Amino acid sequence: MNFSWEYFFELFVKLPAYIPVTIFIALISMILAILIGLFITWLQLSKSKVLIFISQVYISLFRGMPTLVQLFLIFYGLPQLFPAFKGMSALTAALIGIGLKEAAYLSEIFRAAINSIDKGQIEAGEALNIPAWKLFLHVILPQATLNALPATGNTFISLLKETSLAFTLGITELFGNAKMIAGESFRYFETYLAVGLLYWIMIVVYTWVQKQFEKELEIPYRRDLHDSY
Image (cartoon, rainbow, N blue to C red):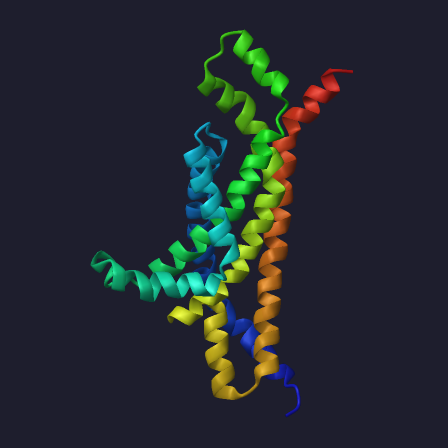
């Protein structure tokens, strides 16, 4: 079967209709991952050996288990163990599963970003009797955010591609729709090439937006560096 450019361009116009579903899954999962990741980071940085151990087990478990297995455990397994989860939608299971998975990676990124802050700044603030919450909000958080942003962006890119696994739960997003079209038309190469390029375009656009955001966050530090000379 010869490659059909006409069919390829037809799909390239048709498939973007499912991009909003993919982006919705990615954004909500990322928000969930950030919130859980921050909590796991707090456990990691605590002085309690029990809390640290719990955080380590969580990170090891969710980083070591395939995402697809986690999605199946949540969607098919939880309702069997806990009746309260019966009736959970596939979309909810996908959001929870992907969010829990990426939180394990984000917690390590956040921990490294916080530990990278010069301890002298914190000690100076404590010497001036500045409250701990003010130190965190005005000294640690801005710098840690800037340090963590590149790696966090890479995590979001991975998460965006992992949304394609939601199809295994019956969710018709970008990849899921492409898979059904390919099964009906038997034009697998044109279909998967079109969907692959659409994912690539989304990632290119996101990467550009992230770089612009990083430049905006770096402006105050550039001014401080310029004023020091």
